[in-house]
Image 1 (cartoon, rainbow, N blue to C red):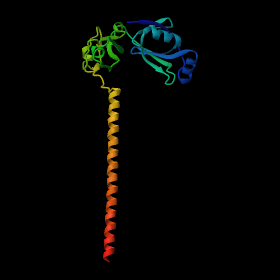
Image 2 (cartoon, helix red, strand yellow):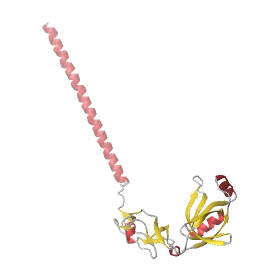
Image 3 (cartoon, rainbow, N blue to C red):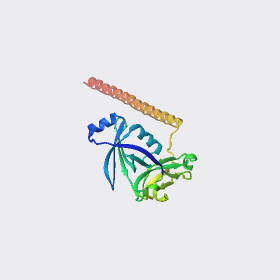
Length: 239
């Protein structure tokens, strides 16, 4: 488990106005809290925090906060970001005890290319990106590796299939982590062109048939008109 040192300083003011001034000075407002720790308002240099975050590789690392010459071991519980710029605007540090289990999220890392994808053209669908686990702080894994190379089409891995040394997974056992689905059947360009041609020919045939029916109807109407005229002439002759 990675441990990263990070310096923080106390801050007295609270509220949006004070927090805005803290950010304008290149710092991030933060708070330290925990079951046995009274909430402490602090601030951390923005650049130093970004560097520590990059070194730690995420929020599952333990941060050793240097505050007024004393060290506090914490985890990052929440990062608040600006909805427009995505800049970090506040950090929640959770104080921990190295002798008590804690709950936290740990990222999942899939290893290898499944046979069903590489050989059979299947599609790998990932439905979980992290595990919720419980363990002692010293036993926190940086990530959970899952080998997926042997998976064929139709096969999957569930939470119940994974065991973590010195840690307990809190997610439901039946949850699917990854599944290899059959490839989507895609029509070739030639097939699509052939179908389009068939549809066009059928449409033309329908139009031709409708035209022929219309012509036959018109001719029939003319014949009927001719017959009516002849009948009228006959009637006149009789008179």
